[in-house]
Length: 119
Length: 499
Image (cartoon, rainbow over all chains, first blue to last red; front, side, top):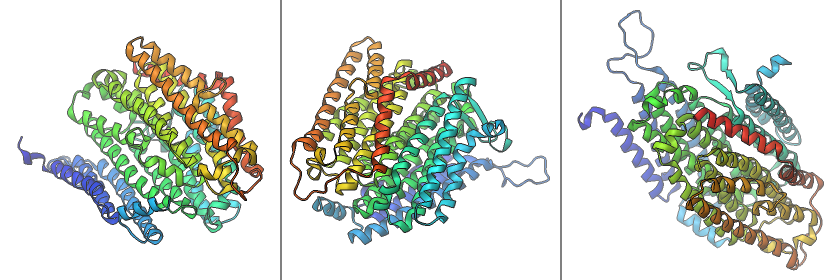
């Protein structure tokens, strides 16, 4: 089993870690949201890979007894997770807008400084 | 009637879920509040019915849309989930009675419809997590709860703009936690080909030695730990609780983290099985240090807080440590103590946060320096708070004593040095609780009121619900047959299913 046999899973892991690193290392709230999206998208890829069967076609019924179908269930599941991801991103970005209106900045360190001052 | 009760498992969830969009259309005024309270009370009533039904005739399985279990989505109400459903809907109804005047002051009237719409979503999500028997459904309901709770927490912005950053921080951490759970569920599906919890559990023995399953357990436990605010993943909780509107803090303190504790119990005992979780995996050794660190360190941190809501939030993280300890002990007594503490702490903390909310309503601040002399200005509210504080310490006649009593029994049952050590750490942590409760008492009764401080008691509509919780607390602290009975039944059921 070579490294590239399961390259889909490796791409998932790499994207996942890049996303997590972006969330932790950036102080710009928009960049944090980008990292969060990347982090979630990596999981979508993981689910899609899970449902793929080698030589399988799209799971649409065809009149051929030998046809092999990919598993549609993970695709359906991930459709739900994509909706959740979009909702999270939208809510996160709207919070960033409100933060910008209230604090006048979207830099985390600057916000923390202002919160310290207001105590 | 019997046909209605056979639909009860879904009704308890679908009422708030479908009520939410309707509530958004109701705009402002008293109507959305009344609507929400009625729906929540209906859910509460159904939950009571369910609890008695389950205790009479065993677990109920409800197949959504009539599709049979492993293929369709199944709702399972067993003794534990019925008990947690009762806690959630009960706390929610009590808090909503309190909500009318408090929310009018904290949220703009034009937004009431939307506010209560988000509240109902969050309630439906929590009820859904508890009732569902489908692993992916747990993720979906978890996100429904989380997304609405980010919105609700950010609503505290009218009083303090830090509510926005608290909500944002919670959004980042909460999404990471939920995504971890999603990966865990994906790995479980990969290995079993099913999402039904009972089905996964029945296949678990044959696959438990594989690497994906170990990864799945890791992702699930860490994901739930973030949602649970288990030490050291608690950093989102103090800010979120401090700056959210009063009723939201009280509601979430009573329910949101408790639902995550429920999830942890559900995954460890129902899905992984006792043998795997505590035999092959060293979950006891992993969870006990974090639990002990949680209640020791967070009690110390609570002592140094100058914001009363923040003080209670840190104390919540400490109390979650007790619940985790109960689970980690991996014995029936420990599990009983953990489940019992879910119930007891939910009532106590909600009562405390509602009392603080009444102080906030009158004085407009939760900082200790502004609350000096509050004992003379608002005697009834402050007295209620002090009684709740006694329960945090664990004084006899309060439910805090009952759950600590059971926890100490479970710890001593081990009979080794670790058991005695744990009992001593619990004693020390209770002493820290004495200090932080005493700090509030000192400020409230022995410091002079600041000049031109507002005088007078909180309105009756705030006072009565918060005293309702304090009175319920004493009821369950003295007459323990109900809460202990249900906790024991749930623990016995879970352990019976595991062995």
